[in-house]
Image (tube, rainbow, N blue to C red; front, side, top):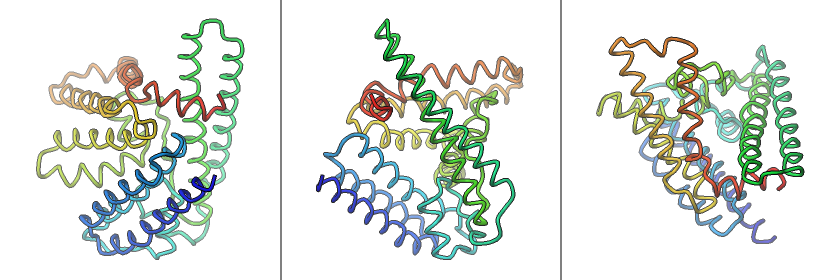
Length: 320
């Protein structure tokens, strides 16, 4: 127990250093320094939690990665612009919001903004639905008939449940809460089920924080140097790398699979672009576009949520 407490202390100190030192970097738009801070932080948290339980390792790595990536995204985003955040606004943004754009927190501390209560209500409803799905999963395990079928079905239910609780629930509550404090926060997951292309899904609907981060930190800086297609593929590969940190490193297994998943996504986005460029509008049909999108989203998904991640993290988080 004392070792875990000590690791929590080190984790907290590391993220405090990132926030304090990161503020100096973003004020001066020091992009290279931000990347060095990111690399150093990832190496440090890896060794801090090297022998901890997988769930704890995942928590430490994800939080530290997001905090360090914010420094990069904000330093790049304010390059050539006047930096408009006080330290308090920066600290709240860096530690309390999952989005990667700091500009909404330039108004933090001001009058409450509209639509806060609906966001909070929506988030609470999704947390409730997610908890109910976890209870359903427990019932299915209790009455399981075919072990392999139960494993697949329950794993899918748990992934949906945790997504509802975190992505649509807690992050929705967070967005509404910060709006009450004057920050112009927004929904990070925007009705992804309505996507009719992978391009739409990844750029406009699913995890806007990630698309903001890769767009600002990777795609835009590289686009002029290597072209849009190359920059897009590197952005997806970088997303794969970050998911390796979150999904493979904590369980020390499945290396390369999340990256393969995002390479597939990037290639399919390029296919969509090629179809449009050649005036082949087959994906403009809503039904075909929806089937195409969710086929490529779901069928390769075992690469992303690989077996050991599901067994060592997803099922234990649900109480199994």
